[in-house]
Image (cartoon, rainbow, N blue to C red; front, top):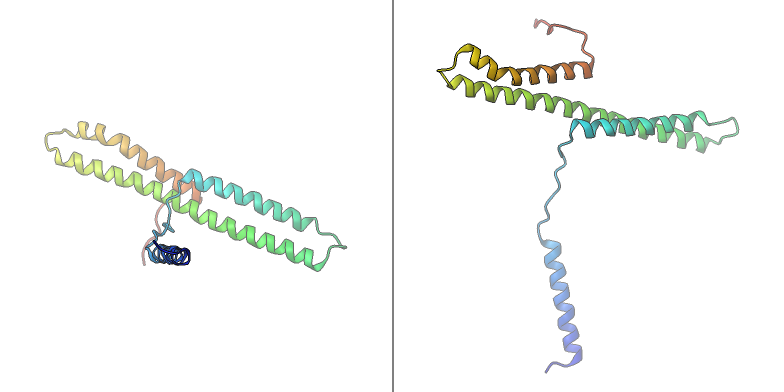
Length: 158
């Protein structure tokens, strides 16, 4: 039978050992580039726009009796809100491009599948491919509208 101080020492040693094992065990890192849907990114842009609006209101509320500290705080709030908005817009654009790329990949997959079926007529192949093609065209139009492209044709390479 162990005496009380010995039991306590063993308990402390066991606790230290288990803490050391936990501290040294590998930890899964969360993905930094988590996938964000276009809808989630749009909501984030809207949230950031609200923050920018709030920051602008705080700046507009400054009066001649406001302190320099008040002005600096309002400026910092606006800079932070604008930075958040810029990042949200980048994320939204990436989500839109990714959505388009998924549509294009699905179309290419269907195209490869249809091209292997040599017995299909052109009409049958067109009927099979049309829904996928329509999806790609719609996604492309949405992408163009989102970035407000004015050029109808790609720029000529020099």
